[in-house]
Length: 255
Image 1 (cartoon, rainbow, N blue to C red):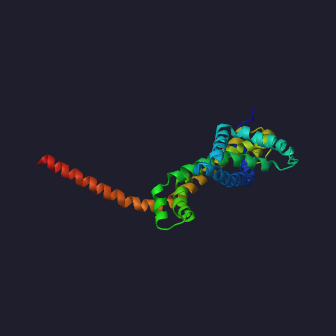
Image 2: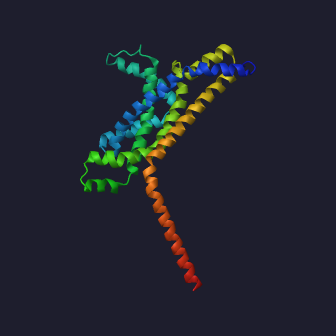
Image 3: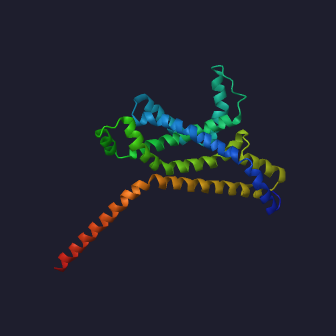
């Protein structure tokens, strides 16, 4: 049991935990950036239906989506050095953050690959064919037509993934990584003020998650602003047509 609640400890723990925020954000940023590369590579075989690689991609995605992130952390941290020893590569002295970031990147890559695949498939194929018809190359059609729309479609998924990654970094302390949750463990053990420690930690996570959520929402609106401008006149036109049809029907019934 901890000691009696004291708000002064809560206020004292906040700056101490914030001093480790940069490590948490570094893990999130590095794992997401690496995960984008992994996700893109994993998504390609399924987008282009490459027989053997497509199956391997499905197995990869199923494994990382179907197993707990904590187990993946242990497998990467304890298993990867043993595998690399077979080819005479010693990574036993590597910083623990390397294994943490790699584990989160591989985990994120599985979800990102699905987001990329869904976003690209969500773009109307007719637009790509029209781009080819006016003389665009495959690269131009992808960068000018498919990519902007795919980004807009994938932003909500990416936002959930980034925020989920932020919260999942709280498990990194199980490998000895000294990020915010790891620091909270030492503070709680040293002072026996567990409630104050975890309230302070939860407040920081909540504020950062809210900021990320608002940022991604703004990006989504920016990317979809052109579609909104096109959609609004179409909606107004549709409403006018519906009003006219309703009026004609009522006049016919009245007649």
